[in-house]
Image (cartoon, rainbow over all chains, first blue to last red; front, side):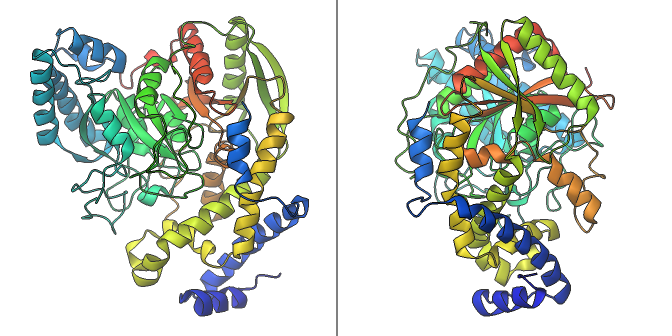
Length: 63
Length: 471
């Protein structure tokens, strides 16, 4: 597992100023691993020029 | 005002007031009386605000007597989810943290409803910070389903769904980030419209997730939904994501029928099972649409779970950003489950968030070019199981099974927040437990009028929307 409870605890403490118990960090590690993994795998399809603002262009350009 | 008049919808009530069959004051008094009575059973208000409502009604009656009609909603008493700000007034967002917070601005949607002549009866119950699809609220008490108070009314616009279904208000505004208009509409048996992203201003509406938040109406008929949407839609320079698309006549497709309309019916979706009892009612709704002249095509959605994950990543990242300070300084003031829904966003990499957002354009383009090619409207479940009880879905301090059940509730709604497409929840029957079942009609960008046309045709051929809880 890439997102371990220890990593979650450290990131939260060092980067966000937020303390998580070991038990809570373990739950969060599962959640973060799932989302991080799914989105990261899907990102392989993104091109260099893809960007968030494309969404509004598509929404407003296709009826 | 008779009991029958109190049961009128928006359009009929507005007509009765305009033609002076009843006054705005009479209509408001009747709605307040029903609300105070209904509140004891359903807890769908956080605050009933009788005094300002009656003062406003009297003012509108004086204007009408002087020949001035404010707009199409002149004198119609409405009520809205307690997250639309009105300057100087409390707006709790269903939270303890904002229990006494007074807004520093007025939401554009409230300004527009005011200009159209509507009256506010009070502030409706909702999930804490609009985070939760069931109707639970630890701080203000759970909202209850008017068809059976033991069951969940859906959320997060729980009070909006319950109040409209129970005929306490003829219509209400809600907000929808993962299904929060469509779910309570489905659970309570009314229409709930999430418009296209940017169609309705979010200015002055409490944020849940900037990229996925939508504001829209809940009402009992397509005509009433069209009236409300017409009043609130349109560009707003105060909302950076607001669309410049001209405001359509949202009632244009009403009464025109749906002959020849091509409807893609979702018969399979990856990882999203549909309860057989709900499936049977959905199938029957498809038969009705076909009998009205629509052509139906079976479809499979195979990216539903992925869109769900993208949306989840965006919501958690944005919510953790806006709640970060409070999460650090006063975590004890959140319900456990609301805090738990946000916290992962504190440790998700920013690159994952931006990758999820960057997928929106390509995913929407692909969906429109493939699944929606040759299709006008998509038909799919709103809530894929019979409406569970509040006890079955109480996530405060409970285990994995409850969390899994609650996650299933939003499986078919949240993906369309990610795609930003208009989606309308339309009641289509009752399951054996006596609770409503609904289907969703999803359209192409800015196709709200078409969706309302589908609802109007369906309601013209069925009687579900005429049933009254306890009636």
